[in-house]
Amino acid sequence: MAVFLALGDESVLGFGATSAKNGFVGRIHEQLARRLPALVLETVTAPLAADLLARVRARGVRRSTVIVTLAIGAHDVLAGTPPQQFAADIDALVATLVAQTPLCVVHLLPDLGLTPRFRNTSRARAIRARVDELNAILADACRRHGATAADLGLWSKAAYVDPRLYAGDGHNLSDVGHAFWAQLTWPAFQRRLGC
Image (cartoon, rainbow, N blue to C red; front, side, top):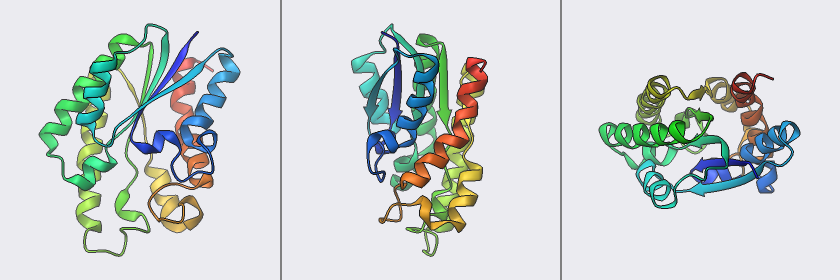
């Protein structure tokens, strides 16, 4: 049994979508399963990178894990996790995942300052700056350890003008938003799989 391990915050569970299968991880799993029919999806979630690192260390990564994806950092942006702490946690996470799986895709953060929840608030500019800072940390960890970064810059621009990409709470993604996220990040998986 081959495992696709999805790590991250509640977004990897498809929050905001009508079902987990309609979330971006569910959609990516569906695409991967067409190429690897026995691929099983497992998820490990935590709101912050430090919490996720602790869960991964406690749980370990199964030997049967062939693909892993990491989508973490949104709550670190909003909680004000110090950049040095986030960098240490991400570096340890990505190093562990790359060492134990043949394919690791790390999702960079969308611009949370453009979400309906924050775009017209006094926090928008600071949130956007934090997203940029944490994205630089994520991208650096990918370069250093040989993981693939999936950039969501285009998602952020589209989401700013298309309210359908968000669920009613203005923060989580809708089915349409998850589908677009999966569409934008799928090429990162394709490149590494050679398909």
